Amino acid sequence: MSEIKEENKLLKSVGRIILGVFIGCVVIFGALFWFRYGTEVKQIAKISPLPVVSSFNCDDNSTLGETSAKVLASIINRGGEGEIVVEATVLQGGNQWTKTQLLYLRENETGDINIVFDEVSLFGGGFKCSVNSRPN
Image (cartoon, rainbow, N blue to C red; front, side, top):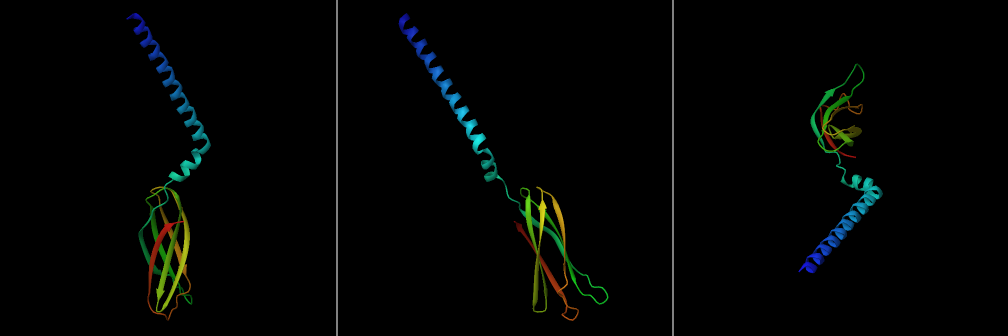
């Protein structure tokens, strides 16, 4: 009986040693993997920006002798930080003009843009505008 108990103790000890070595190897290989590929994994997991146009308007920016339209917009970033493309379009009569502006926003940060369209005409009638945004 005592030999069986001694044998069981020996097996338990060997099992614990094997388990400890296995856990140690997993930790070491995990650390090596993280140091080698960690930055790449972080880049893959990076959340891209999610811009939302919170408000915009078109203003007549005309002065004496000069006609232009000014598009003002506020964009909030609901995603991760990054560069955002803001696209403003002005329509007048049968004409359409589009301009873009880049904006870098952190998470939950709001930014404003101001784009002037000198292409509008004094005699072209009223104009309308629209604003869209997307990650760059």
